[in-house]
Image: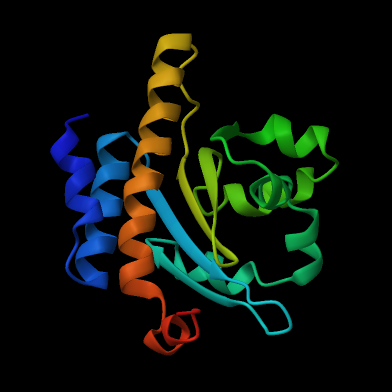
Length: 175
């Protein structure tokens, strides 16, 4: 992957460009779905959650069950890990959530890579790419994919904070 592709994402001038570049980047890595989420969780207030990507609308509507979100092994890992990880049906089966994988697989979420960046100011940036076919088995290819996603997350979170955070929230920062 060329450095300019990462820089293009970080220097996106608006939300539509940011989203288009993220999805394009995911497609170059052979992933059909890309989702980026910025969570701003100020203590004592409801979190502000903003997402971009090409999440299928029908999946978005079907995935709002709070109980399922709490059981989802990918979501649980994103809350605590800061390194990219791979997930597929085996992870869901091992975690006793095979039914969730079955639900998600119907929408193209069969296997993927996700990473979370836990940022200052109670912010969290989550990035995931998903596809229908299995990931390559070669260690070198998997390592490259994980590294590309981690590097993309670093660049994408810069644009996400600039483009997705409401201006009012930025004014609450200490001087």
